[in-house]
Length: 254
Image (tube, rainbow, N blue to C red; front, side):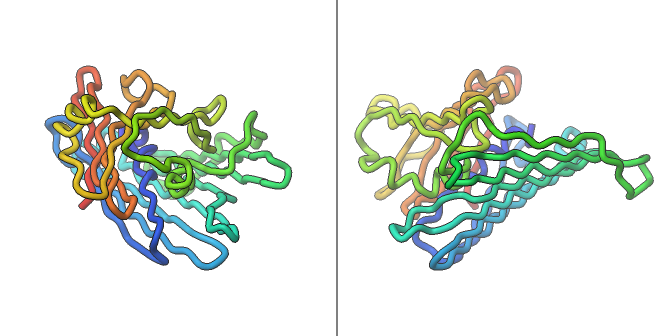
């Protein structure tokens, strides 16, 4: 469950700060808090770094996820026009008796993305030593300037009018497995009213959107997330709605 939810927790663009820390809590159905996220962002004149850590919270959540811990590290460059371009995106996971790393390396000159994956398994439950059980490297069938995180760091460039209903077709490394597709919908006023019941009313400078990942996320057909963005371009609250048998997933800034 939390492995899937984490996909969305990277989408917290911070556009006007040299350094910032953001914390989120993850709530699930009637279970309440099941996860926590701590994210650090920093940038210089020529580069930026985002380092995010996720862990399960509570006995039941840890039992279900195998004491899940994840670390996502995004590195990139800043262009002269202050656009961010991702260069590497790394995911480090440990769950149960396994641990894994996934590394995307983006070559903007060649316009290609290379994915490297490794997975290890403990020799036995009482042993701290691991044995490699999987390893591969291949070139993705698509290229994108952004990874999942950087896409949202650049969101203000792609969406100028955040009040006008519109449908944006974007692309990001680490999103849809086939082509990296990500869709963002700016809702009309009628839909905004129903979204506000779950997300809260958008305050001055905030805006609402639907984020579609095009992958089945825990019985959600397309992985569609409702999001309320804040003044500083930081997610305030997000809801993955109507998961069959399980209820809503809520991601809330603390």
